[in-house]
Amino acid sequence: MDTPITTTLAADPAEASFDIVARQDAAEADIAALKSDVTEVKARVDRIAVAAQRPVISGATPAPEVKGFVDGYLRRGSTLELKSLSGAVPSDGGYAVPREIDALIARQLTDISPIRAIAQVVRTGSAGYRKLIATGGTASGWVSETAGRPETNTPDFAEIAPPTGELYANPAASQAMLDDAAFDLETWLAGEIAMEFARAEGTAFVNGSGVNQPRGFLSGPSSEEFDAERPFGTLQFVASGDAAGLGASPDGTLIDVVHTLKAAHRQGASWVMNSATLAEVRKLKTADGAFLWQPGMVEGQPDRLLGYPVVEAEDMPDIAGGTTPIAFGNFRAGYLIAERTATQILRDPFTNKPFVHFYATKRVGGQVLDGNAIKLLKITV
Image (tube, rainbow, N blue to C red):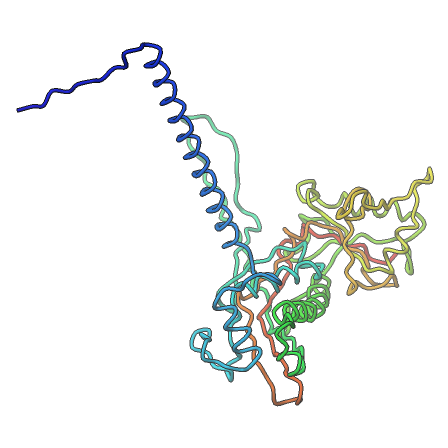
């Protein structure tokens, strides 16, 4: 038998109205509190998600695998916490560093390696990298909706296989430094490796021979012929008009260099030269006395020449007869760097006691990707 539902009403209507308002206020307060709690929880989840994606930096609590690698292997030489790369042992080239340390090395390397900062970088899981480039043959045209499609030409391809070599660095620290818990071994090691890698890369990406190292963009063939006339992989140069210098009208020559590059490639193009060449270029003026070079107006912005950023690469040659001291182009389209993802480190406490050496290796390759995207200024008549 159903029990009848009874509702008790206050005898005084005013009291009943007050009671309803009080309940409404209490409900609204509860809802506001719930919203506040939800907002706080969401903010915490967002902070956790951001922290999980951020590489480990100095002063932060490292991930367990990073702590085991740094405190176990790098400081003490213990291999109990390590997982070697593909079953590797120290005699096979060392251990792959955790991705947090690898990311720290890569970030610092990009900051101090001039060509890496502007080129196209591809990371691979194997030692070799190959890419097919269409060099022509594909035709296009216009037809009506129902018209037949004419047969197109067979496309031509060229294979890009950047020459690679093993890049190595061998920084050393005393055992006393390693025993000091306050010594930030992770940041120090990443900085030392990045600096040594950057020095070697700077030379190879500009002048590398392609034998057990990348092939630099100045090591390949060059010609005065225009884009449609040169063989694939050959860079175009503009003559300075002077056998020993920039010529009588260097501002006009630099403008010629800019406009030999197609408009599509000029979006994102930059100048590359060393400090000695830049010192000469900074003195150049137009006919009305304005400097061609303009400093960056905001901190962090690059200096500009004819409106395009200037990158200093000390491995570029000085101004002299027969050299190419200035390059201009879209290096992200014109030069390819292919590198193996993981850096490997071998701890060596025996070779130079009482110092501990950290032998770091990485396979890196490089080659001109599109010869039409880079132009050179050559000191010649």
